[in-house]
Figure 1 (cartoon, rainbow, N blue to C red):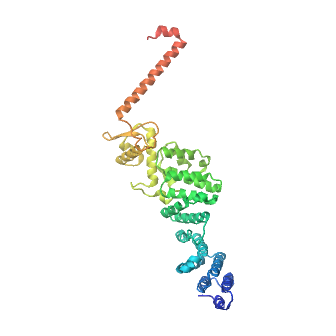
Figure 2: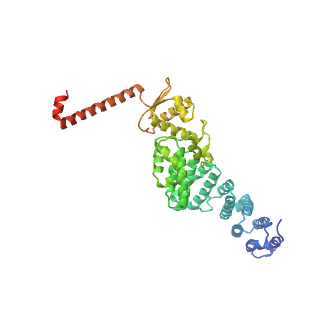
Figure 3: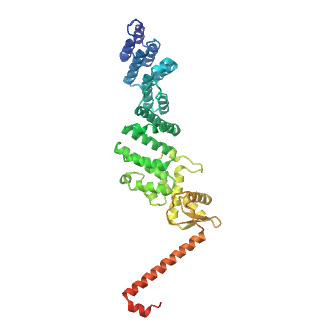
Length: 420
């Protein structure tokens, strides 16, 4: 229901010499002419009357510009959403209006998107922003403005865990960010990229990205610590192996990490110590849903990471272990423990060999290379023979050094007592 004052004002517009100025005046006096219960209907009526009056391009742009400012001034998110969507639909329904009011439609779209964001309606905000024309020949849009819109779209999609749609717009951003000289936009771009890597379970890359962001002076100390915390979480969830060990080392040496709640599990993982279930459960309380999702092998992302880490830790404690004992240590059955070990050896994340007849896993000393296929050990017998040879050679060299030392210090004793 349109308020009587607004209805009377609209009825008098036809008598005005400058209708556009009359519509702008009504909009600027909305708070006086309208009432809270009728303001939405009033603004719709004003917009419909102005768009249907055939004012011409210049006048229509001026009226829509005033409408945008009026909505901003009201600060009512529900009204901005309803009126803005109504006007955008009316503009897009007319080919002539749609092509001539691109700038005003874009400004109105941003107002509607901001209202959706304020109401935590992130999907709707992303969709409104995505509909804004940025590539039309009739509207010149700079790279910085494009980047600002696309980053908002990416962040809104990430709020509803739609990493696929977010990544599509992030790929658009990659084409323009090299020409954008705005530290804030650059920071949001890097953070969005890290969040997408995190959502896509590219935890190692995400940990590195989060850690780089955590050292930026462009964000507050609290935010730097938060991104450092995210870096640690992603590093813990990353596949065990040499690349993760390097990232864990960077984070462990960061002096700020000791103040975070995740430091305990970070330290144990960096030092290849076994993780207890209670520690894992406590760590899980701070993880996002996608970080606790169930993988194809039936384990959660966290559980799989812990199993692989504890397997790596077991390789530091034992030179060999049977399938069932290892399964008991990892919380798996023997066959599953064998399968997990075989995969890590095949992927170059663990060095050793498997005797399937005797059901024993033999671990080799030294670090894995991280290259696929490099974790496979040579034939067990050959390896043991080389180990015996090395030990025998070391003993012989020690005896020879001792004899030389005695010869130097006590030549008479050696001549009398030592037989060559």
